[in-house]
Image (cartoon, helix red, strand yellow):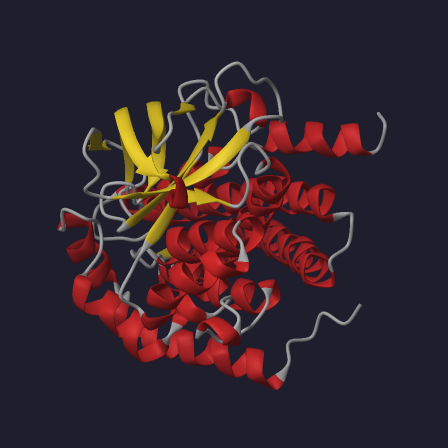
Length: 379
């Protein structure tokens, strides 16, 4: 398996990094954090309408670019490095992947086109009060009468849930258990009976919301795919999202290493740069190893995703577990090397630390993913 990026992938990553130098500069990040939706709408319009990033995974027949998971990883590594505040991840890694894995071709044609055009954002509402990322955690119910489906329940920690135009709600048929009876429904943001409430988060660069659905009625056409048959597609969607998040984590870890090395060359103590001290050299060397091993795990999993291998879940979990811990290690060490200024508002290490800690638990923490790998290996 060749892990070298193609010329097109290198061009994509370089173009992304060039754009993000200004669009996600330290000043822009702090400005976006103050926005009620957590991102700058002007920057998002540039991303959606001019760069076309939301269209990356969407097939060409639906107006997209028709690229793959490796290409998405290349892009998200750059956005993770820059701490981009935008609904890109929720729209593409969650929304688009769900529609591609669960929806019918007719539904994809109708729903993906506005996303490809940059006029609609989307997100997946999966997790609930239990915090579980498996089918057993789904308790929100989808009853039905002769005309509509009726959704009742609460979703917790939905990424961009307060600002997304389209909500993909995971629910189960009343009385069903486990992986049976799981369905996905398209719910508009202004649906009667739907309440969206932003929740405080550790990571100010990524917004979460709780969704409460009280007798929310949606038409039969709002069902994505077949009733009660969504779990296999959802499982693959969550695996693909874990790989995408791992890409952000690799980018963030890379940036933490760069900041640590740069600061250790500038900061002087006892008449010489602190980077000349052996203890700090060892820290930076360990960070470098963490970054490179995480990158290998990421791109192996992304290649598996594009190849359609049966090993997707195992390798997605391996990548998510390893990249989560590598990012947090690098973020922590970067703060240590910066010293007291590392956690001041003016410096970036604390933002990466918060993003690393939050993304470590999102989509399943390392312990959850190691357990999945162990089960897959028969241990």
